[in-house]
Length: 200
Image (tube, rainbow, N blue to C red):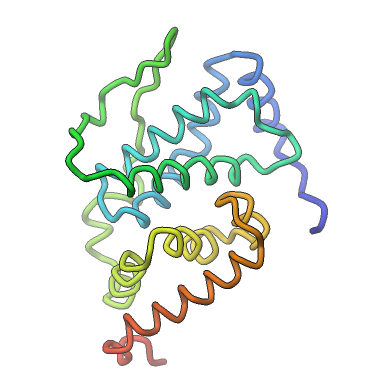
């Protein structure tokens, strides 16, 4: 694996301050990553409320674990690892949990995190304007097993490397490659009846 590009100075400073217990610095990290994590969560879940819950839970866990973050890792990969674990935990539970308002605060002991999800790019109007091809592909991705879905979205929408995906999901690189291959084969099968949508 090549050298990791240097972390932006602003982000590095926020991480250091957050690790020293400065809450406003962690809020700054949330502001940097909340849109990206929400868009990913929305593709994963297909439901804005579930996506918002997933992102909120991800940042709560990140807040509690920020001191354990290693500075040689990419913060985005670390966040996606947490998000993946939260998503897989949620997918294992029954769907009869209570719904919490997006405005509700999450208790962190001596402080709280409010669910803050920006509207840009995630409103129903924009989602409705997806091309028929994009909608069909997203629908097919949501039919994949949860771990395959995670890997496909990390690789194809987030541009994560095999190494980063392996780190995020806790599998060897060989497993990631074989599951991604299997996921692509499954997608071809799911979309086989809609081949006309994907012809040049």
